Length: 182
Image (tube, rainbow, N blue to C red; front, side, top):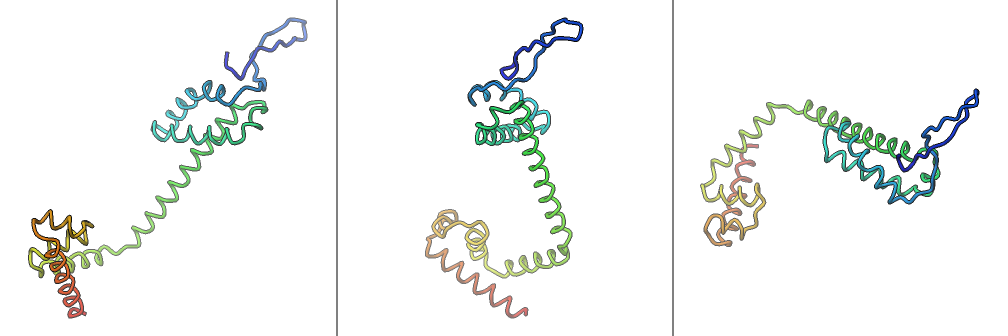
């Protein structure tokens, strides 16, 4: 017998008595409710989402929302039904957000000009090839990979002050090349 159901007797028109399980609001603690329903809800959500991690997150969010309203939920005719409704609303909301995000990303990718990207990449490669190998290495590690001058110095096996000089020269050279090309 589920914790939120208990037998109720009902009398038929012919006088026979049936004992049926019907949901009856019973004031129980949230902890008891959680223990009684978490496994079933998790199993249902795993089937619905096809992803255990998503199912667990939805489960947590749903129980949190129910806990926030437990004083009202505990007196409802079907607290379990409310829990499942909340879980499904959370799931649908996540799907809507994912779909909106996908549409936005799709629109952004459709607006880009691939030829412009190729030209920009070609120009970057051309400019980088004009630098010395040491300048190129210093600028790539500091500007592109985001390493500090000390980390770059350790990677390249040179002093940090040398890295700062190399990156400074590289940036000046790149600025000069770009202004000459304009």
